[in-house]
Length: 206
Image 1: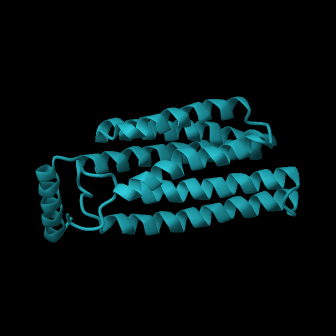
Image 2 (image 1 turned 60 degrees about the vertical axis):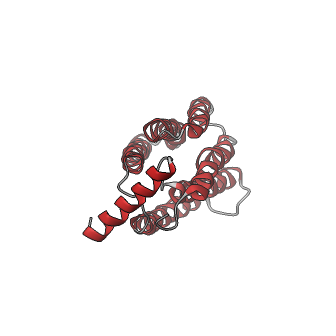
Image 3 (image 1 turned 180 degrees about the vertical axis):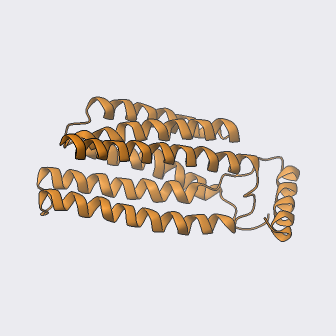
């Protein structure tokens, strides 16, 4: 962090202290991006499974999830550069938010790679269905930790909803319609709180 950025954050913290409020979190754009991307991907996966989308079986899934990976990588890079220009990036709540979500993302990637590896080694085409139940449970844990560490308690209901979605999706993972449930859950527990966070996000030093 440069001297100028540090001075900006100090000025921002001072303005917040004078107004008696907590520094807003900066992960709203991330939640909106992942909530929308996941919802589109899960819906497309359902469409391929059910024949609603005119794709070849194996090729359709490959194109979908390779495209997902490319878009996710580009989006993550752009979002990271966006956060750097925001005031309050060094606040405790924002640092906790970033750390918790990085940990959750690493866990989801590990589960995804393990499930795909199992499918390749054993020929179990249903193995990747285990990903989204675990992913939503991890999203819920990240939302819950972020809520408590940043004292943004309005996020807690979204955390519980995500955890419940994770449990339900684990039970019904091998049903085609579970992907539509996962798409809806992405909008409910990622996009919705993301929009609320964006509305509270600072555009400049107050």
